[in-house]
Image (tube, rainbow, N blue to C red):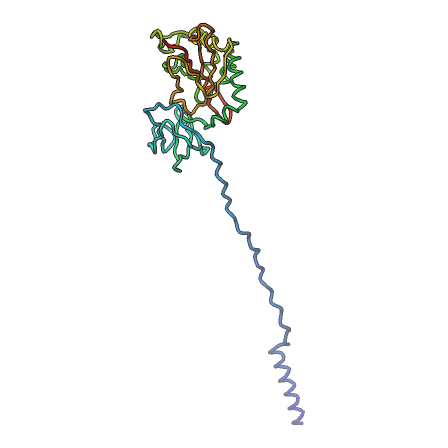
Length: 293
């Protein structure tokens, strides 16, 4: 009897222990935490700077003067450097701004500095060899002669440099008269008197509209047999002609009418100075040479 009770107690004790501890469970597989996807490294794209444009040279600056290079666009900005009238090797960065009606461009100087200049005083550098071989220039001269013969103002206006305008010198000693493209459209019909300077032979001032004071001398060459000389001023008898220093960066053609037989001194030459803009040639200067007693 005691044995039975002991076995029963043992059974009860085992049941109680089983209830307290519970049935052993199978260990659960740990759940891995989700790994956030790795973001691709962000790369900063820096666009390449625009290519430099050029080279350009200084023009329209008198021998005793200099061209100011300023720290910013406009005549009121501090002067960063100065350039002589024959400076070359300048490059445009592509930045430009209009200030007080004038176009200012940012340039890189030969020493690497960056500054701003008035675009009026720059022109594209073109070698004489490339200029003389450029068929665009020959076509430009053909159109110029045609516009003058036909008294076609709009046709003439389309040939004039949009940056520099057209400077007309009735003689090598007279100051140039600036004609803008919009003025050239009415140049053959405008009756407004213009002061063209002093005649080197008579010392009298030349005053009158273009059609009266300038056109007859132009037609005296263009309407008669004449020669074209690239980059050459035909030497006359009494003086040595020279292309002005302020125009040295403009390549030119001479339209030369030789003297007539028996009167070789009545020769006449018109020099056409050419400026390039975006690779296209334009007329920038007309200067007359003739015999002077």
